[in-house]
Image (cartoon, rainbow, N blue to C red; front, side):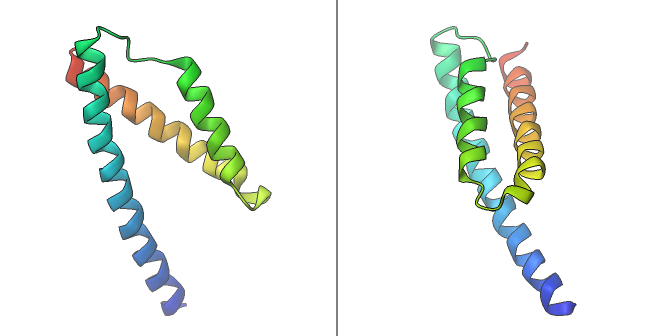
Length: 87
């Protein structure tokens, strides 16, 4: 049990680091959207992201959970963009 928990802890650290990298890229997206006066929501892009995520899942039994996690990531990203863009 301890070994499995250590593995999960290590993976959690990696996930957090990747999410922080993702949010730094979101900062770049915010700057571009502001410069081009674009809207926060890009439904077409969201659909493509979800499609790619779904296609990358190798084990179908994990698909619903991973899709749910990504929906939350996208939601948080939009909320963060809105807070930074004053919307």
